[in-house]
Amino acid sequence: MSRHVHRSVIVKIRGKFYSGAAVAAEESFAGALGETVPRVVIDLTELDYTSGAGLRVFLKLAKQVQRVSGNMALFGLHPNVREVFSITALDSILAICDDRAAAIALVQ
Image (cartoon, rainbow, N blue to C red; front, side):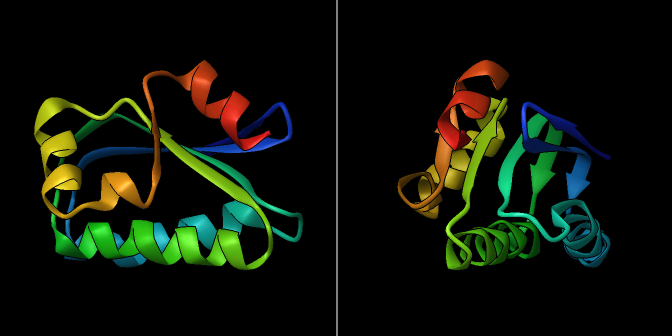
């Protein structure tokens, strides 16, 4: 699910983010980004689990956004998801904010 707020696209990922969901998510991201310079905020408040395939989607999206001089931030990571980002060092590559307002402000 995605929506636009303050010139940003907010994408919400729910449940478990694994290989079966990764393909659909990539398609959803592509549709949500459209033709403009992307300002992407990813809401993970309802994400319970992510696999390596899910992490690859985040990295791929970050590269796409960076390539066109956009900005991307994530927020709302549950402790177990946050730990996966920390173990894989993605928290040093991707912008992770404490809340939605901070993520929106960061990508503006």
